[in-house]
View 1 (spheres, rainbow, N blue to C red):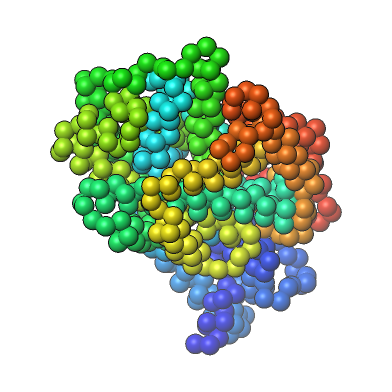
View 2 (view 1 turned 180 degrees about the vertical axis):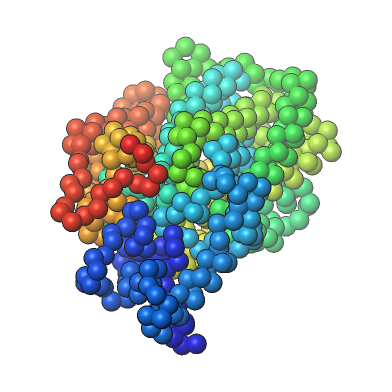
Length: 556
């Protein structure tokens, strides 16, 4: 038994891989992305490639260790065999023997082709569901405070959401080709250790949005069931953690159900609201240049909210088959995020016209009958759970990207408990305004980071076709290096140049002050970062002896 257990730790089933020391990707010798060892060549101690070769050996020539390893491999292959339900020849079919409620242990490792499943159209629901909660409604209601009225809010919402959703859709297209979460992809631009900076900033965003979602979801359910806030938020947080632990598959399934339910319910709410008509807040109170400056403020708030979903994008598309059409992934992901953010924000903009000086939730009492209002509160409360689980799941990806060697479920629990603590301490009347300010400031890094990532993927590496072997993303001393000077310089300089254009309650730069608070920092930082990185245009050299074949599935 001891020998079998030892062999089990070092054996690697056909098509499998794992993470070695320092985050290096251990590939089977037969994998198209791995390096085939020469016969009798040097072998690293403890490496999974040290498994004795038995594929072409006569059974009588196998030693005890090789026999044990072979038994382990066959057992694993039997348990995880590539049997597909419905259509055994389809690469898009879902594996029949994978139960939904199994702990996800894949972490940030490369997803082998044999483990891919799903279709690009599934990206619609996984982007749609997490946004169906109160945050979007509150963002949409901001137009009334700014004085731009209903139609001014709608135009800012549509344009801002479209631009923000396209960026997320483009990032989602990277998942099927590279087969990894979003943040580790940044190692190509920022280097292995340099990528810790955007990963840590993203972690702050994930935990922040998780806390906001937990507070708002708990408030919805507490108002509905007339329960105290504290026990309600604990229950909501516990559900978030459980779903985040089970990961990708549960998020997709729950997202699908929430999408179907909310689609029907929000359709009814929209019809009732249209029939009811707008209130005194329909017409704008601002005029002239003040109106357009207020419109720009609304636009930047909307864009910043929607663009902040980009660091999550490939986390939920990396399991798609490698041959998934990139344009189909972009369209589905963009459409799902745009539809949900726009719908929730327009509902908020419409509701607040009924009570322009009050709470948007109070407007629900004016516009909706009691039975429908109860259903809306219930749906918004439940829909906060997949939103929060998405943040916990991506937060786990961020910590793993920073080489925090903990099991994925442990990082989910730690982030979930910490977010629950914040929700208990800071939840209340002032929580939303204060924490929204924090998220607004933290999100300033996202647009320069996004610009660098898009230039690196689509231009420098030709839509992912020019990347070297995937294992270089997982090696500290791979061809990307430890620190990517061009990417880090572009990120820092892009953010610094944008400071005078920032306009928040906390800080207003001189240019933003001259524009009466209009915040153009997102676009300034993105343009500057893209130009710096694009001009530098780092080309990854291919050292002698390094296998730089294209990522698996590339036919170019």
